[in-house]
Length: 288
Ligand code: C2E
Ligand code: MG
Ligand code: MG
Ligand code: MG
Image (cartoon, rainbow, N blue to C red; front, side):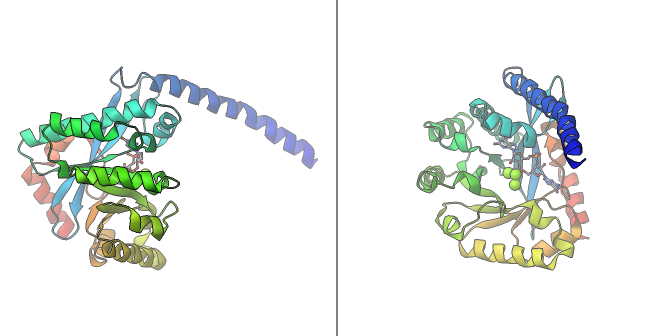
């Protein structure tokens, strides 16, 4: 009886797995054309100082308008792209677009706004990666300190020496480096203290339950204190409510990002967001 049930279950799973494999294949072949067909778009999510409520800049988050499946989130297609060299093409497109946007904002009078860009491991280890970044800074006349490149801990594992040298070179160019999703990887203190970085972004999984989890609060306080000891700025991502913002302010978290301020938005909406009236209204709401 159990055996029969087991066989039935297995049989009923198969069409689903096949469907998934087909879905993947169709996504992959469409993704190949995403850059050339102009189907990628950057969204931008603001980041502010926790205490002074000052806008620091935006994180660029890529979206794919798939002709067949609609908007697909990077959580779904970036891992797929990372399995091939497609990620290099997408990553270069993202970096260039982000730099171009910084130049546009500067021309609109927002000359101090920064931009954080997520990197994939393959990008970081491209031979000409540093040259690519330098060429973009030059082409768009970007103050290097306005560009921050985000890497994750998992990119470092097994490559600590080469990672350190690339990050050092980026910082020598004046570009900032952030460690993203901190706390979800191996998070060895030994890695952390060796990494030449400016910023540590605490993963949103620690932030989400902050208001009713005393242990998450203790973890966050510990991360913040270790980070400050190592001279990192600390950003909390995934801040969705005022209560969490005030807890983070009390815990000395330097910067926050999350739906509380805004969801990631297309460039047209950023222009509205940047209107002084809008920013003032936001800060008033956050201070209430
Ligand atoms: P990430 O870099 O950690 O980005 C933060 C993610 O959290 C974004 O998801 C953002 O929309 C989401 N988020 C922001 N605030 C909140 C909040 O308050 N609550 C919740 N629940 N979520 C929030 P998104 O845009 O779907 O991106 C997912 C991941 O995909 C990113 O995580 C990053 O790892 C990757 N990614 C995005 N764009 C790029 C890119 O251009 N290149 C590479 N290599 N990876 C990218
Ligand atoms: Mg990020
Ligand atoms: Mg993150
Ligand atoms: Mg992430």
